[in-house]
Length: 501
Image (cartoon, rainbow, N blue to C red; front, top):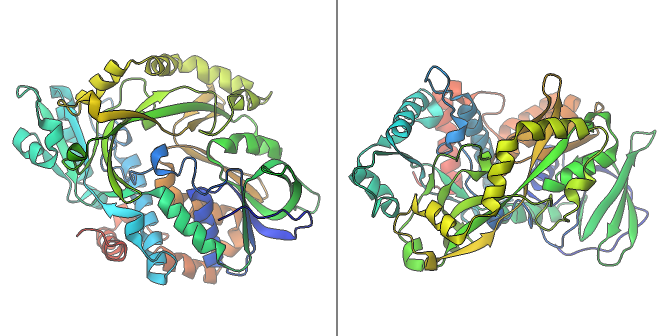
């Protein structure tokens, strides 16, 4: 897409999206499929689609399905494993695959290999206590149909067959264990977003503008939202109007939500966490690792800092990353401003920010420690997963920004959340997505919920209900309770998306 010239007399759009990431693209395609007559406008301040959180180098990519992410399966005080969050996230990712499969079968996404491919998802731990945890986790997950086929091993030789780099040079006396889920995926959300956006661009009633920044907006007495927008290149101002507004601007969503003036935005704050990767430069090493290997996060670290040795396909090339190494920046976006955090502070969220900050001093110390890490310390962390790593083979790369949600709490004053949060107005005319992980992987589930909440009457209609089920065959059902349905939808998605059997 290329920036278009502004027109100060734009007609009212049915839907207006802010941001050109995976969330806005998913919502746009979903709504236009449900009702092709809807008019849709979009505005993105950068000059490219998917240039922030959705970009493959800016963290998104695993296809989070809870197969390997240990923070989704906490150990209870009695020693049992809670798999409820893992079940939920695994099901949400299946919804995403069903949606993409439907678009492939219908034509909007002609080449699934451009954005998704099969790759094993693995968890790897060492030490007797961690091995026992992983064994219990594996046993608990096998009770769910969403995790059937997961393998577990404590045999170093077997694990070495799966992930040779991880086992080479490791102390043979060290207890180790791993799980492996062969039907894991690698998703390039940047490529997917661009494909969805290109499809949207060709539909009637759709206009999207790059290089345009939303500066302010207000809802008028007639219920229509009036947005003041600036052309970044020329400085020209334009007024856009819409019946429904979605704020999907990643880390920039909080500031825009505050500008909306809706009471529901009161009390929300943001805590930015930056990241870095070590990127392998040695093709011979890259070729020897074919898996996404996740470990246990350090005590006090945020969930998106789970260490992983991660194979990805980016721009037609296989890449190998390790990290992410967390850090702190006052920016809310990678291409944002250092004043972002300070400009987000308002009278209504000072109390939650202070309370959440006081309760998370350990996280602050952890992030400061990450910022002050030396190259030698980063290499030491890498060698816990790849003992034979040569620092000369690895290059430090800056990853994306994640803004964690802080919200008011009656008992604690303010709490720091590590998931995503959808904030909607009472009349359903505006919605904003805040937060981070698991983010892009669950975009379809999030947007299905948004549509049902903000377009309730139409969502209940027989026409939209039928289209929901056409796009997502398991819509309205719980896969964790339906083994046969889980197998059926997975096979449909596998075939359509050209994934391994």
